Length: 428
Image (cartoon, rainbow, N blue to C red; front, side, top):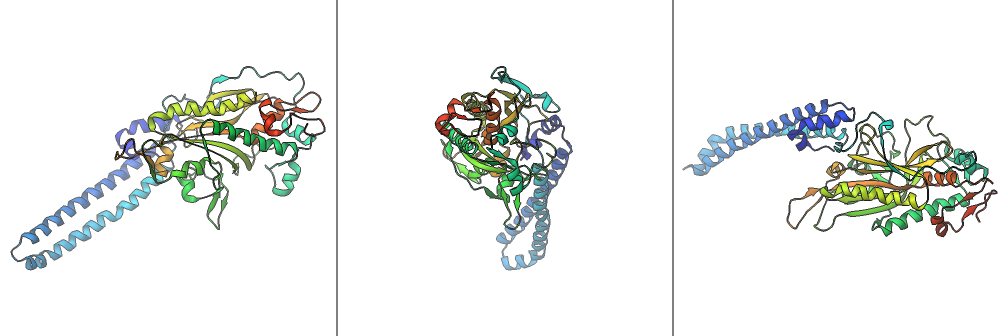
């Protein structure tokens, strides 16, 4: 959530940041007007309290206190009523301000390039030209169905569209990818967490998921619990309403979890295959840092995810998202995109973001720089390390062989127990 103090101090900066996202800047004036009312109510209440205190002091100094108290009682009662009236509106104004600010995205980092959409994202680096396969590449869903390791028809029978069933080697490969990702994260000093997959409304709101764009979430209405759209949610909220002691930061967490999204607005997009599903698995990476360290942490976090693609020897590129493409919670985002030969294009496989103090303000996660110091908000960062289904799809497409078999990345063989899936769908 945006900082009201910053809006008071530098409203023009906030307006410029909102305009860079092509957003409406009217909220700045609305929030300031409500804040002025709130501060006016507080000032009036304090003035009235001071008048009452003066009357109370007169009673204390009076020769006949009982008589003076009786004489001033009606005036004191009027002041009490006026204080109550002045302060009654403050909670309403607080809620109104919170409602306005909670619907606004994070302020963009100054380094984020301007742009109007994904075509304006900037390529920072890549792994080199994707190697030519030497034959017409097939899409991963066609390969998977031919090998009988992916079954979309069975998934549709069980659950409807945008689900998949993995059989035999594909199920083992999916599990191996998660294990591989987690082992590499542990080697980079991430603490593995097994979080709940259902979280409260408060947890969803605290991590910036319940905005006016929240129609992508699955909700159990009876329990009022949400299926997590990403493990970023429980990992980021682990320290909600806490003050972390000096020396605690940075904290680095990782979790493997299923993720659930309605994919609202995705009608007609990626209707086949593993790219856009209602249920998928992901290994998430989350950082909590001191504010001055979050920019560098984003580079390290991105490198941690990028190293996985390097080990898997998958062609990829790193994109810096432009102002119109950065997500709601983020101040700056790098996307990792992996090459899909059948589509002759790169597709996102990880998104690494610095959310600065935006989520921490909602979560009230603070830290002390030294014992007894004033608590400050942490900065939060998150990234996929990586999306399991998309990685599996990328391996199928990039490691397909002319004879219809699939090779395995060398780094995965100790995790899968096989180095190829033959043309009949058997692991070897």
